[in-house]
Image (cartoon, rainbow, N blue to C red; front, side):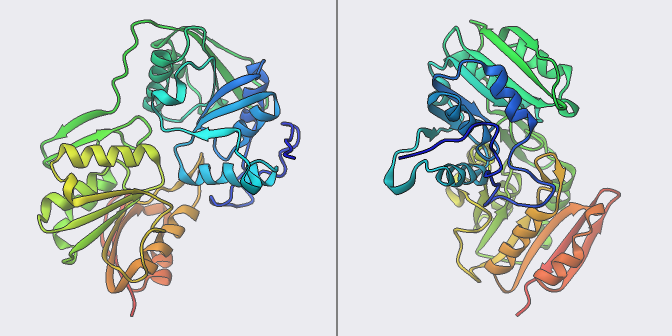
Length: 377
């Protein structure tokens, strides 16, 4: 017999297999506030942006019979499944009362209640709001919560572009909820979006949740400037591909090269595929949603290019980058190269020296450092 737990008992929730540390939690006060503000949770509920399962499992504990859930990060999906099993859900072949969906109409079609962890990106919020307004029931309620320090009036305005009624709750434990209802009848979804960058000869296509969107961030531009200096290879890997800028640029610069682009973000993977197609190189770019390089054999690559994330949620943390460095070290053949760009204040060079081998500074600007590491024999 399966069991559930109330929202007052979340000590069993873990972030694993995501990065775990004393200052990183699997849930916060926002999860509790969203569930409290939602009111009646009976029937089917849609959850978007659940980090590690607190919202989904909290909704089920509060009376939901079924949850459709979208988590952008693959590690968040796996953490939800792991936390559910710890509570007796989905064990021994039982069907879990939740199902993962892509961020498309199947997620929200006919929905009456949507629970949302507010994303940091206004573009991501806009994509979600448009999707719900266009495909959920006319009576749908959206309960969107976040930490007050990360919220802005612009979030209300983004929601108001898709919903006729938007209001805010009182703050509690430094969290607040925005309520949205009465979807506008004229809302049309216009994601993903694209932008042409003639200076680098690339068209970038991006969903709302991708870092830098359809732009090209400064760190990535630094990588693009040095593509000709990277070692010859039959196959290259764009690790943590984001919007697929580096993968597309590599494929365009080297017509005989095949590229693997990998990212754990669903928005990044979809954007990378779209960017590859927009630049006419989709036939030479394989795109995989994965935890780092988990799909790749040891010592199987000659060249890896990486612009690593340095935030774990809202916290600056080196854990993600260190995991990616270790993956690159495992997958690179002896003598293979990792080209990495990073925020200079993070000082990753000692870690790269230790994990991979000889690391040289290729270029340093006021904000970014570009390094090349050669895998030791």
